[in-house]
Image (tube, rainbow, N blue to C red; front, top):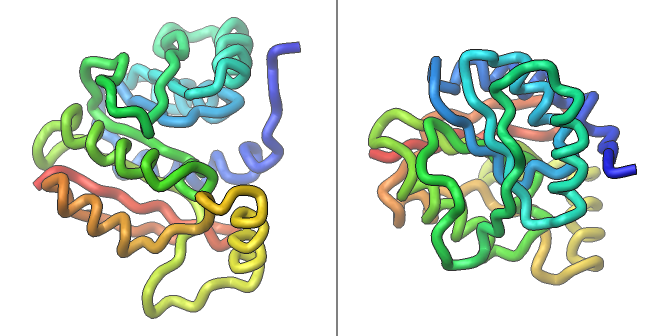
Length: 200
C-alpha cells in the first residue's frame, strides 16, 4: 500500500497548525519541503482552505504516499506532489510561493539541503511578506538542550555523519547571507521549536 504513516504527525500537527495560523499569509501557495508521508499536507490543506498546498519531496516512495493520501482528500486546494531535492542546485519545479514550510528535515539531511532551501526561499518569497518556516529540534545558544535531544543527535550522527541537530544560529547566518532574517521563534511540545524567516 502506498500510504505511509508517521506516528509523530498525529502528535505535532495541532501545535504546528496553531503557529501556522499566526504566520501564514491569508492566500497563496504554501510549498511544503520534504512532505514525507503526506499526512501533514492533507491536514494543513484542510485546516487552511483559503491556501493552496504544494507538497514536495525528493523520495519517490514519499511522493507515492502523498499522492495516495491526496486521492482521499475531498478539497481542491491540495496539489499533486512534485519531486524536489533542496540540496540540488537546479531550479525548483515550483514557480512561486506565498510561504515555504519545512518540517523535520534539516537534521536528517545533508547541510547542503538546508543551504539550498534558503537559496530557494530567497528566490521565491516576496520581500517582507512570505515566511520560510522550520519545525523540529534545534540547538540554541544559551538554551539548555534536553537530554533526549542530545541522545537523538548522537543517534542521527551514527546513522549518517552528515546528519544531526543544527544550531539555530547557523540557520540565522544562512538566512542573513540570502537577505533574510528570523522574525519569530515558537516553542512547541516535545522539545521542538518553530523558526520563522522572512526576506528583509
